[in-house]
Amino acid sequence: MPRIPLHCPGTITSSVTRTSRRWTMRNLLALTAALCLVLSGIAHAGPPVTANSTNVISGQGAPCQYRFRVDGGLDQLIVTTQLFDAVFVPVPAWPVTCQLVPNPGTLAFCTCCPNPQTGFTNAAGVIVFTFRKIGGRGTLDVFTNAAPAAWTSSITFTSPDLNGSCEPSPQSSTTVVDLGLWAQCLAPGPYCTWSDYNCSGTVDVVDLGLFAGGFQKGCAPPCP
Ligand SMILES: [Ca+2]
Image (tube, rainbow, N blue to C red; front, side, top):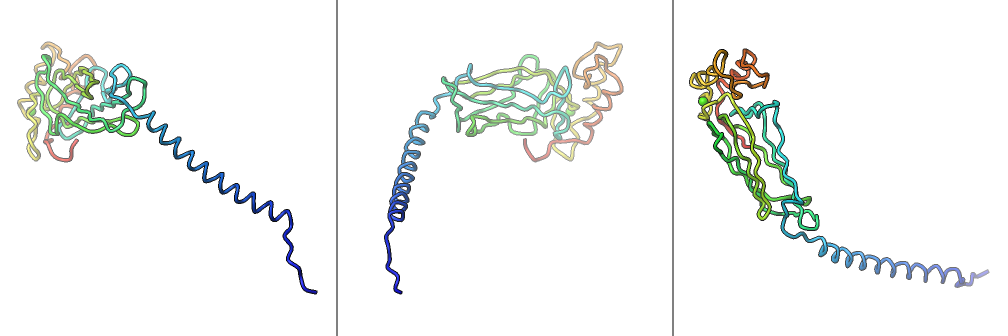
């Protein structure tokens, strides 16, 4: 017996439902795209504001000072900056410069790597600078410029290259001249922080060991 094709009411309904679903999906996609455009317009950041942003300096390995070494051994100074605008929206792709600047307390300073360093904030408004391979002793200003936002902090530091000579490798930046500077602070001479690498309050054989770690070390790539 030949079969008669039937259009059941149920089939028609499901076809209509499918079409309607497709139409709704298309509208939903269009709406989402429009919403994204509007939101991205709202989220567009203004210039960074110092009071709303953060600039954190870390990496100090001893309680009283940073200890650097021209080969990058010992401490690294890490500057983490996050920029926000006046309404706390992160500021991406913003140019930031970070510089170690000698101040009146700087007794000697040299660096094997570029100073200042420059870069751009990421999507979260964050940029991280790393400073290492440094010689000298005393204090330094850490100046971060994300104009119109800016910060200046001061750090105390030392290194086995106490006179900040930064000889290139294979020369040694730590020589008998530096040994003389270190030994000035041995008892009964006056105490000085720069010779006290472990910040114990006295200059002794432990510090001599850390100082000696600078022998045969000179400036060499990579940077930072
Ligand atoms: Ca030296």
